[in-house]
Amino acid sequence: MSEAQAETLNFQTEAKQLLQLMIHSLYSNREIFLRELISNASDAIDKLRFQAIEQPDLYGDDSELRIDVTFDQDAKTLCIADNGIGMNRDEVISHLGTIAKSGTAEFLANLTGDQKSDSQLIGQFGVGFYSAFMVAAEVEVRTRSAAGGDGVVWRSSGEDAYTLEAADDLPRGTQVILHLQEDALEFAEDFRLRSIVRKYSDHIGVPVRMVKAEMPAADDEDKDAEKDAAEPELEAVNSAKALWTRSRSDVEDDEYKEFYKHVSHDFDEPLHWSHNKVEGKLEYTSLLYLPKRAPFDLYNREAPKGLKLYVQRVFIMDDAEQFLPLYLRFVKGVIDSNDLPLNVSREILQQDDRVTSIRNAVTKRVLTMLGDMAKKKPEQYQEFWDEFGEVLKEGAGEDFANRETLAKLLRFASTKSEDGAKKTVSLDQYLERKVEDQESIYYLCAETFETASRSPHLEIFKERGVEVIVLFDRIDEWLMSMLTEFEGTPFVDVMRGDVTLPGEAKADEDKDGDDDTEDEHPLIERIKPILDDKVAGVRPSKRLTGSPACLVLSEDAMGIQMRRIMEANGQAMPASKPYFEFNPDHPLVQRLDNEADEDRFGELVEVLFDQASLAEGGSLQDPATYVERLNRLLLDLL
Ligand code: ADP
Ligand code: MG
Image (cartoon, rainbow, N blue to C red; front, side, top):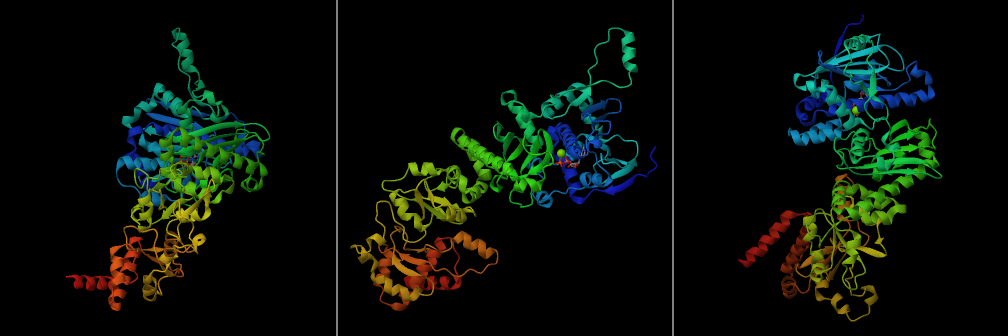
């Protein structure tokens, strides 16, 4: 008997909220609690095996690592026991009483109270252990750390608090004992449990054992003998072979999917995967998964990322981020190397040439998987792009070695895409539908698709049937500053400088040609003094057909997106002045040309300037004056 008194502690607030959520919103698929508990047991065994590389005596006299699932129908209990790393008192408090994950508050704030969407969210968040409370009225955890010290018994009914008690007679590892709810007694049935274990945990690398099915007894004597046996015989229910070590043709899709849930802690199925054994100078196996949905912390720098690293099938570490570039941080899976030393550390990984080679190969592997998907299953690729496209754009900007491959994977919205803002056009497709003599890939950046698609800058392109790529992600201007061409065709921003349209010669080559008359339009000199402090220049436009005027960025000016980001971060931006372009064929501009009253002329020019910046989606520096001017002009009319 333990002399220690039970001590009551409260769950951390976030843990309490998650528990409530577990108990109330995931009912549809309760059986997955077993997968979660077996997954934890398997992780605990992996950790012990890892520590035992340096300290073999951690095994004591119990080196046959295994997970036992037993039940007692009379007592209505189910027990999942492992002889893994175990936990000491402090570990029990921090692992079972708190949620230490970054982004927990964010996650909780996103809950809506709608069961369906909340249970999806919780799936992404992955609250493994607490899923026990979906089926148990009370959970008891009996655990002793492999590092020594007293054992601990943790008990809770999943409300506000749990109790802790010291226990000195526990074996190494952890037993999780569930006192089943009345409506969950199916989880104390042999057949049901076996089928759940096979369904979800077949890939676990150690035996998951259950009591051997009783053979019908030949006669009464045998039966008695069996009853007397002190220890019931156990047998493995799973195949107990690490999944990635098996050959691809032996593994069923469903097994790959379950394994994904184990390595990723995601409740959802993966979108796609790639499993490869590499032999030669370097020997390793990689199993790489693409998730269906982006995690809520995709943009959180501290969020764990990377692959699970094994060396010769021994688990070494989670989240080995050295095997993937940052822009592939959403990829999950396993690397099992035959070349790295078992005592490899994160520091060593950072400088090891073998790691660099594996990382380059893994990167190519992922990009090939994406390229194949884009070709063979464009709809699935689109699903991927909608979730992770913005992250892949980081790669197109920074990974020089794979830039061409990445550029082919990019998808954009365009003036010719069928479903508007949906980003579905590849650069290859764009080039296929170039018009005659088109030598550039035209694009336009704006805040939103709507602003972009109505921009006056697009008028001439629409009229001539020239496709323009429409960019409105935050990262786009940066991306376009890094990408200058695709397969030899340069990118051209239609909002900048002097755009050359297909079939027209470049303006500067044409300097002495007879087109020059246009540049000497009489309005230029009249408008200039009025807008002098706001613009870099005034000129007749080649891009307008329907609008009277527009603003054009100079070649080296900062784009609007970038500018807004900097300003939002509190950085004062030096004013970069646009060019004011007017459309000499527009009736308003022709009226302007005939206006003799210089005051009215000035007012009209100011109004045209303000309208042009409104049409870009910009805001006016002095909206009140704009309204006053417009009202004066309206009054004249009435
Ligand atoms: P996760 O597995 O995603 O870390 P869980 O909620 O499933 O989250 O488990 C929380 C933590 O509790 C684990 O990270 C681990 O440290 C600890 N834990 C759970 N089960 C066991 C076990 N059987 N043996 C040792 N530690 C465990
Ligand atoms: Mg877990």
